[in-house]
Length: 282
Image (cartoon, rainbow, N blue to C red; front, top):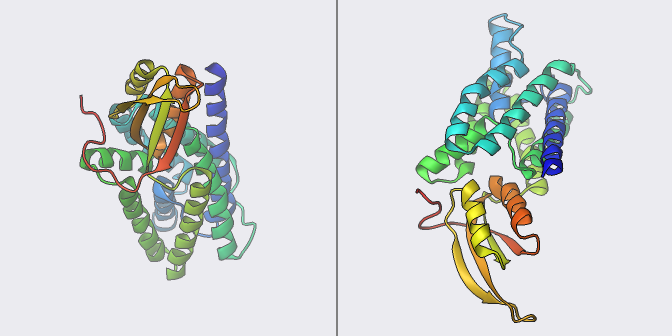
């Protein structure tokens, strides 16, 4: 358990380093904006620097400040474990954004958008894969999704759309287009590393249905259907737990299954839509 959590922390820090490299070495110098709160922090840093003449307000500092109230909301409404690791990612990203210099490796804005998007996408992707996020818009989108029971992607798209429009206003219109290219590349890389589907269905065949069901409910607010099944080869009576979760909860589910019944058979498939009760409210 300790080694798994230690590895999770290391992965989150590595993801933060990659995210900071993508920003400081490629995106910021080219005035290409990242997604979510990182992009918003870039926009505010540009406004402070170019329009207000305040150089102290760097992207890293603004990113950290913006995520403080979001972390509180996430702690209360999303989940403590997820929020802790997400805020750790924010702290690490803010730190490395301040430590690493802003350099221009290329004057080609398209190369900066693509390579910055790829590196940032790898950082975000491995962070998501290990049960955290880069904070900010992810947590806000999750809270709104739970309140309105609508897909997370719509809220993230709205935030990123605003960033693209503002990028064109603050700089040349082509910066908005290159920002769109960078966001597309980042999204594709995240999809390849993690999963492109916001909701997935897990079917878990186990001999420890009661223990596994309780462990899942202790961590996630999700409804579970338990069905009796029998092994075709062994003829053993077992149970199958059937539940729908978000992609952000995959890591926690894998950890719980490993801890409760490492011999359980699990199949995770994409979910196009969910109708009816998606989560427990009790």
